[in-house]
Image 1: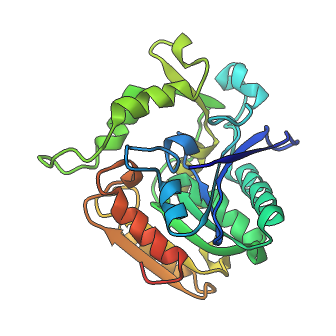
Image 2 (image 1 turned 135 degrees about the vertical axis):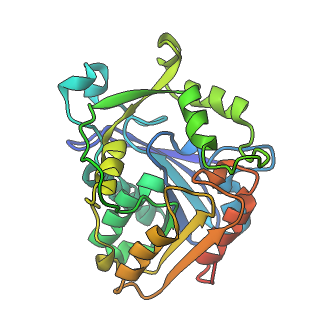
Length: 302
């Protein structure tokens, strides 16, 4: 599939941002990735039968994705090369929301249309903040497995960045699959090689690992301690939650917490999909996820 690429310059709040587009005649959709891996390893990853971006194109959507600062092909925060304990967590949700807004502005310049956001996990926080700040720019907000406020946790004390190995990723990816169930994670050997390749310095670490900013993780920890950085009551665009039934980070009660509070949204939907975890877009059931999100993007029931 033909791709276009763009790069937004560095600003006071952000490194340079890498954006990819697979153009089509339909409405634009922007993918907002989560806390630990970039767009090429999520919406852009081809398991052999096409990527999620390809699926959006097949449904007629103008498909967009980008990498947050210090992920994938975007620029790095200067502090990522300094000792991690010298700075607070980098890339917190308010700064990340400005990055989302900058990419949305680019898409609107290119297309002249409102943009739908599909945000995974932590990415739902900056996507929601951007939707609240500029509702006229957003068509609808789709939260795939969002991180939701809980209570009783301890606020974050994380350093600026962390190194994440393939082994750590794999352990998180499979931990929610019910005991005795056949594996659902697909193509991890190829995915893991591509993950390490997303950081030119990964192979210099022992074990090899990708350096990521800790702002997203700090936001997640603070959310579980009761400090959600965005207010669902301020969402004024259609909102939907799509999640795997095995997802321990977005349970029934968690989804209800958001949708019950989203009283200003013109429509709210919740789709709980069988046979998937928090990483359903990397699993054998991903086409159920594609279909549910595709229906929401068309304004239908998921």
